[in-house]
Image 1 (cartoon, rainbow, N blue to C red):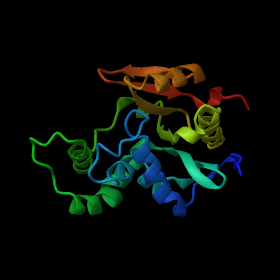
Image 2: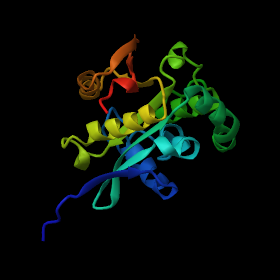
Image 3: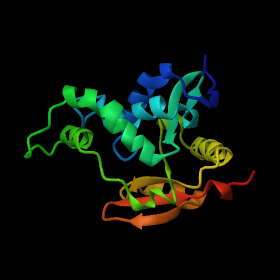
Image 4: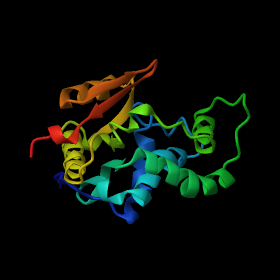
Length: 207
């Protein structure tokens, strides 16, 4: 018997966290499976999925297929507040778990661990685009417009809460994602050597 796909978007729940970690890893290589790159399968989720669910759950959503998570969008309304919270409450336990890597270690694991020990400095565009997001969808949920629907769901909620702008970074090698955000209407805030920072004003989204 062939099972029919049944997709839906719903608010994230704490019980979704293991699924978010799994999806984060399986899409962590410019949208492809990063399992072969990381010795510790939880590292990407520790930075790019988990903390959002605990800090700003009301702007995090899950895409399900027959009730099983197959994608997500996680966000925070305040990048400044999120950065402060992770430094004070999220990263200390992880720093005890992961020692600072040797300076010669250039592995993907080491790069994420260095991020945990020394998060990037706050950006000037936080004032105009205070929110930021991460979105990942497994292949089974791609190609059906669900990425656009996840983005629209988040932006409608940010608009409802009066958030002035949202941003995200996309690696230039991920050409599909770059094209997706341009088509949606995101504008380039900064064009860096390997990454493009896109921004969007939620008030532009039609009611």
